[in-house]
Image 1 (tube, one colour):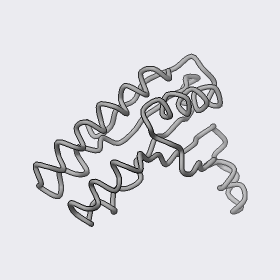
Image 2 (tube, rainbow, N blue to C red):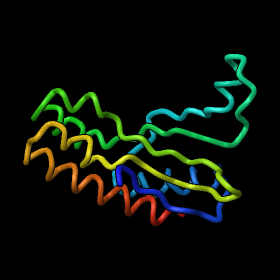
Image 3 (cartoon, one colour):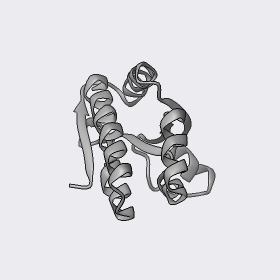
Image 4 (cartoon, rainbow, N blue to C red):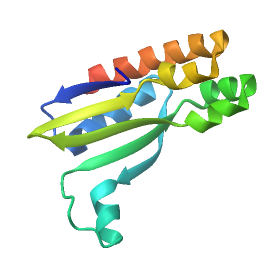
Length: 128
């Protein structure tokens, strides 16, 4: 599976607030937050109304570390976390960093990506 997703009883906003707290504990921050339906409405598309947020998150120390090893890693940075409602349930998910970094075929980067992935999965688990 290319992603890791958890379900939550929280609202989308509560889940995002919880994510922010748990990301900080792991030295990650939210760099940017896209409210997809609001952006679509701004652009004249009114057909999608479910809450759907895309967060770009980063641990600056780890980002610098991987980009120094291989500049192509920048194609995958920052990490993304989505928070949305589907079927009456809030879902929190992320694409697995190991699968993206795996395209570069570098064992050192793979090990770092495994640690980042484990950390982010732990954050999602604690935030649900």
